Length: 325
Image 1 (cartoon, rainbow, N blue to C red):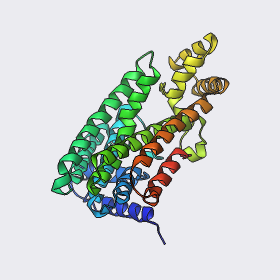
Image 2 (image 1 turned 135 degrees about the vertical axis):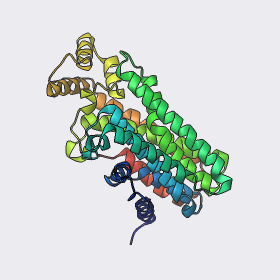
Image 3 (image 1 turned 90 degrees about the vertical axis):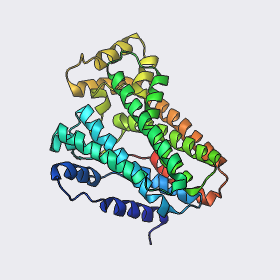
């Protein structure tokens, strides 16, 4: 027998599958359909339903905005892939690689419009706070993406700047998902804010884990080649702190690697990972992740709901923190 989480995931998939996309023009809607079918854990809409459930709300009232948030997430991935010139996503060709850049831009725009359509399917009493939160989240995600692009051509990025970037680009969306569920369930303003802070800290830990997995994860479980961030000169938390801890020789090696003075990708990855190992960056990163995971649970603990009601969100957060993919 399926538990409630599995039933919610089924409901999310069913709702997404019912979106009318088998329509003309096919070159506009087929990429949208494709992007929604090539995987994805549906973590964000699940968060919305679990948050609504935790406060005793009717999850039928939350399913449309939950799917809206997932549509927005997929929109950001489609446009991110264009900006990154990424050929693959979730083990499949990206939309712009399979069709064209122009098609991916236009299909992404339709996906965003569909997201807004589903976000609007809430009771009148919740419409303003839900859309206000959604609009702010969209703006912040775009700000985070711009910072991420800026960092590619910036010689020096501080740890605080990096954390602000991933807060905007990654963490505000799960925070918004959880707060949306709380709003629809009728939670108090204070409880809504606690849920937001819970989600934001989980989101920060999630992104730091993603950075760590890119370098230290098992390729067979992560599903992509190790060291992609190194090859792309991404100034992640690992790189920033390695640069800070490095001696003069190590620092110059890192700078040379991230200024494309090493042509061979395998050699570049091996060199940078070797310095990370020398400086024990892996353990430092894991310890840092733990601080956000702990903060997240501190906020969840402040919410005046029975512990049994919090159990499913706790389990999801723990699975995300310990993930190997």
